[in-house]
Image (cartoon, rainbow, N blue to C red; front, side, top):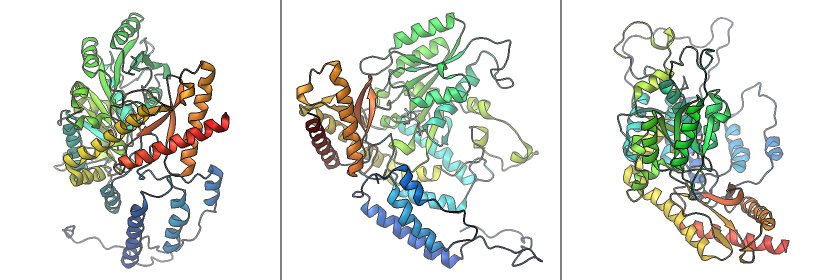
Amino acid sequence: MPQPIREDPPPSPAGHDGDDAWYEGDLTPEAFQALGYRVIDAIAAYLHEVRDVPVFAGRTPEEVARLFEEPLPEHGQDPERILAEWSEKVLPNATHLGSPRYFGFVNGSGSTMGILAEALAASVNMNAGGWKPAPSATEVERRTLAWLAELIGYDPACGGLLTSGGMMANFTALHTALRNTAPYDTTPRGLQDPARTGRFLVYASDHEGHVSLVRAVDMMNLGREALRRVPSHDDYTMDVAALRRMLDEDRARGDHPFCVVAQVGSVNVGAIDPLNEIADVCAEYGLWFHADGACGAVGAMLPELRPRYAGLERADSVTLDPHKWLYIPYECGCVLLRDPDQQHRAFSMHAPYLRGILPDAHLGLDYYENGPQMSRGFKALKLWMTLKHYGAEGYRLLLRQNVRCAGHLDALVRADADFEALHRPIINLYCFRFRPARLRDAADAQADYLDRLNQQIADAIQLSGLAFVMTSQLRGRIVLRLAICSHRTTINDIERVFDELRRLGHRFDQEAA
Ligand SMILES: Cc1ncc(COP(=O)(O)O)c(C=O)c1O
């Protein structure tokens, strides 16, 4: 319980003040408790059935929008009625990322501890932008970042911060990279110095380098072409010899290469670039080494996979997304930055109202000085509580289950003449194709047919509600793609989904014949 306030509080306004109406903004304690229990009951009932709910409602955007067409409420409404709308309108039109058969994007399932943490964090409503408005939230975040670093074999003395997601983590890393590697101080005039020439360039692999990197350089106004695409090998990892050639050519032209981004679990196939080789190049050329491990960095927690991550500890910055493969409820991204001073240099700015002017024993780490956001929610609580609940051991078991599921799916695909394996799964991301045996040697003319067929299969399984499988593109062709980021997915779920994909594939192929 909070301690009593130490001095007499000033008199507070109560009831009416002259002619000004006084509006009570809180639910009464009794109403809050009654409604709160109902909310908890609703969540518990939902969790009870989340394994079996149709994963996707299948309604059109117009149908869903129509449900929410209503005038702005001028008068307050009955809380019971508001809660009923959750059950009547919101929940039935949700997509259930918590289902064990949701495999879309790279979306995590949401831990149960995380759900409770969200409510607790909201109840106190600290602003984790500054130490003073959030002393414990700041220190929980700082501790959680050190734990994350330790879990993946990175230096726990690093800086970093939690972000809305991988996109903002990549942006934070690239902004810090540019500020700390540019051949002149970009703080006062940015890139708008007419005396300066040469483009600032970032490098990532061509097939799998994530689109968020394009947005990051775009947000930095470097132009989208500032992301240079390095050719990759057959296994989708970066060709480091090609990287060297590009760096030499670009430098000779007078440009400023400043950062290489390694994929650490690429978005489609989970490829992990040769991290030590890239770290060597960065050291040699004086470049920032950023590891985009939004999807896959946490795979380094598994001792059996750790050798693939050798060199990750040398990165200047690492993106990893707890709301992806650590199952934390949205939003929760993270960037780790090796040198907290460099991070501070990139973002620090002062305003008297933020810190006060004179020295104070209660000034601590202000995250607003170390990242793009000023006000920030207490995201760390859901991660801290979930990490304590599972422990490193529990997390390892869950991640291993997901990797095993991807391996099992690969085995099913390879054993079936009507499917085509496209890569070996490394982590929890897997792409493959339905390709009837009769089209095994299909000419290019039939490739379009196979594209359409696979898209049709993905659309149909989504609409069936059984599973949420999407397509993606690999080497220009449409493929089925599963991101297995649910702590609830079992081998049985994988087999059910595979059987259904096969059934749909045969059905559509026969209908087209
Ligand atoms: C490799 C990679 N980086 C960054 C991101 C962006 O993450 P977010 O959607 O959390 O912003 C993703 C998203 O899938 C990703 O796969």
